[in-house]
Image 1 (tube, rainbow, N blue to C red):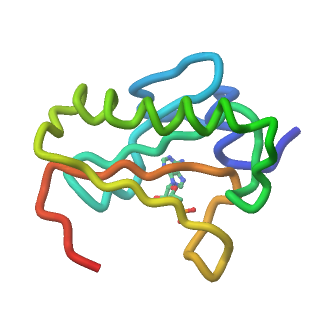
Image 2: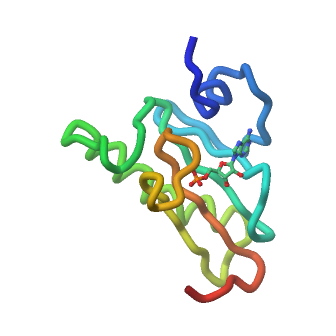
Length: 111
Ligand code: AMP
């Protein structure tokens, strides 16, 4: 059995506030939101991070990127949104299953 928390959410072993799913990805609300809207988009396949992407994932990556504005619109983020992908310990990644943060709906701090 997988020890990965996002695989457990995918498999329904851990509850989540899911807002979208299809055959490639699932999307749920972050448990510790950093903005009014804070979603996590996760591929169904366990891919550790951006470091583990291969050419076979090109279609998946395009799918994820194209889905983000659609989800943002559905969340009412008409004014814009922020996406973040933390990669590796040095990049602040805590869960080692690739995911894209989608944030918005409140004033986001500048970098
Ligand atoms: P990262 O630092 O990019 O790896 O982000 C991991 C994110 O997963 C953090 O923002 C956590 O708040 C979030 N997270 C961890 N466990 C859960 C969970 N069970 N449900 C929803 N979000 C979670």
